[in-house]
Image (cartoon, rainbow, N blue to C red; front, side, top):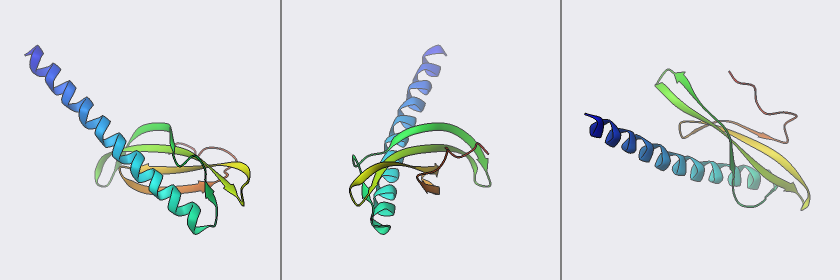
Length: 104
């Protein structure tokens, strides 16, 4: 019975890792497109995970990830942005917020 629980835990960990990789790819593409649409430069070509939590939605329990990224206007200065993903769906994108979004 203990081996079955260990295998189940490893499978769950593997699923979470693969889901996190996919979510990061999706977040990077969303942030890149948002910067391009606004005429901004997406710096470092990547996002970083800032927060991770669970939220109950109408579709069930979902993982909420908040990613941070840097951008520049006309190549001058470095500004912070954020993206909130619920599952793999974007909920909010903010450019240069005064503070991170509040937990809801």
